[in-house]
Length: 141
Image (tube, rainbow, N blue to C red; front, side, top):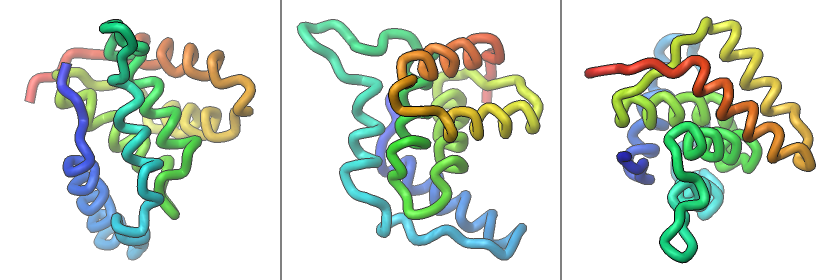
């Protein structure tokens, strides 16, 4: 399983930001204004181990926690939901997978995760994982 690195997220962020600027005349703050260590820890958590055993073993589990953390921990001053989705899709593509879901369904799901209560984290993670599994397809680029 391929990891995701800060340098890749920076490129993804800048590409997304450029697309927003060109298409919608909207711009997110520069990548350098992110809350350091919040983004970095969000990228490390899915791959943490203890005693040689991964806390998050499967691809859907890793995707669920990174998606959740990017939305809930607010690593960026603006665009956290967009970056969570872009990161999720990038991570999937790097692992030859994709999500087959309608745009409205993704939008509603992202809002649901955003509005979820922190005390429900385990339930939300389980639902994110279930959503990913139900919509996961193979992808070859």
